[in-house]
Length: 281
Image (cartoon, rainbow, N blue to C red; front, side, top):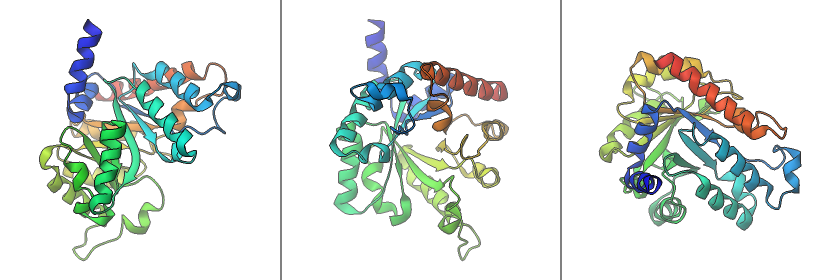
């Protein structure tokens, strides 16, 4: 009865309420399910569906410690219908009290954007999505109509190529990414916007954090890409902010390739949460 009641409560919470509750529980790590058949433990290849077997083991071992799971569509789309089936079944394994993120980086105009929004939110049932704002507000409006979701808008990404466009200086002396951040705050009238800001861009993060308002922040780039969870957590603590999640993909799911890979992943996410907790508390 208690479990059923908890499920109902989580289903009626908005995504923003869900992540705030999760942060208050001391969970700040998003597990990136960038599952690659070439990287999972070899012994799983004998399974009927190795990808799903791997995802299930990772989720079951980390679900009590994860703030969110981010499913990168590219790793599933590459396999066509089979991949989408794996994506849907993986999503069903994610507990309702943990945020689910569709890392699809959508952004298009008119009915195309509307169909993308229906796919992510109505068909798949994700709590949130990553969005590319390059085509302007009208390309994001169909997503922003979903008041109970979180739409993570790309501000400054963790990759080196962010310098090509995102850090272009505009006529007013500001960078393009700063302009997008300002616009995102303007678009957040329904409190359903979040932002993606690379943990590898710590200097820009320090310069911009005072402009984040009440936007929830998704920080990719910790681990394999070189971002520091200690630097990020200390910065957010200095601003008395807790509404953020740090994405770690390879550093958790590929922590080891042994038969203990799931327990090793569990130990890693516990350790990462401990690092954050010791800094913020």
